[in-house]
Image 1: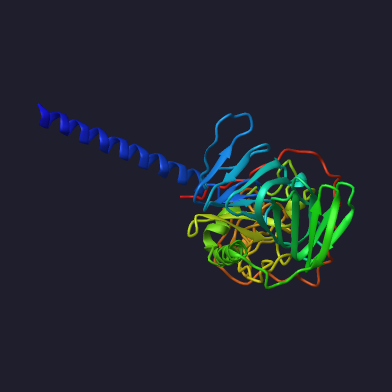
Image 2: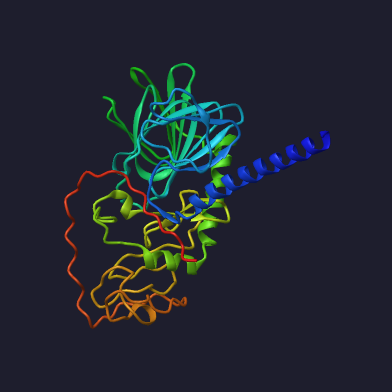
Length: 369
């Protein structure tokens, strides 16, 4: 009798283990199928003790690297805990231990994060002249990142905020109306700016070094993206969506998030030549263009186009030189990108439509099996 009971317990334990394993596998597959994304708030990495509180909930729960934050959600890191969060495409926020932040607005055109306490580094990709607006608030300061670069925010115990601009440019609001350029450090209290000083470039700690390592890892992940899955994804992507992707929103001029199965996290895929390297100086090996109906990774062949200049789904034949309609996409063997024909007059520039209010969206592609 005792032997039979032990046997039943072992079977029950095995069933529970299998069920738990299948749950994790299903969760991972659900995240992996979202190959292409343009959404803010995704959790890209969790290390150590990190919890989250959903807006409207009363109890915190453990944060997972497959979670996506929504407006009003907050995250707390304990001792030894760190987290990396996706902002708009090309921008990461890396939060140190013993810190807390709230995603105040997850919309890509009005993105705002409040660092309640602790320390965070924000890496922002963007070419010179590109318009950016990422709000980073603290109890003492309202800052808006307006240029690609590397930024550090420290909420200090003495009710002051320290902002270090290693590269880039920040605007301070809330009646301060001051601009902080690269290579400067500013200390802000409740009454305004207390001190502005030159930044010591050698002043780095473990958070700065970790951010630099993560930037290198994610840039390498971009270079290691496989061309064929990328081509398949872009071939299926609806570029002419009703929300006007890439036309009225600032994030459309930057690029996209692409899931890397090798690092189990999202890396940045820049738009064309606009961001050839990260703010840390690590080059991106893959990018994409969206013009004339052709979309391809850098140094790759277009995935299709058709004579009507539509999206990558239309066209039939090699390299997208098709007859229009819903064709097969053609032969996607890698080859140099096509050169423009000088004999053809250039197309008139597309009129930029007026900005419209819309919810943040995530564009997802499930790779073909």
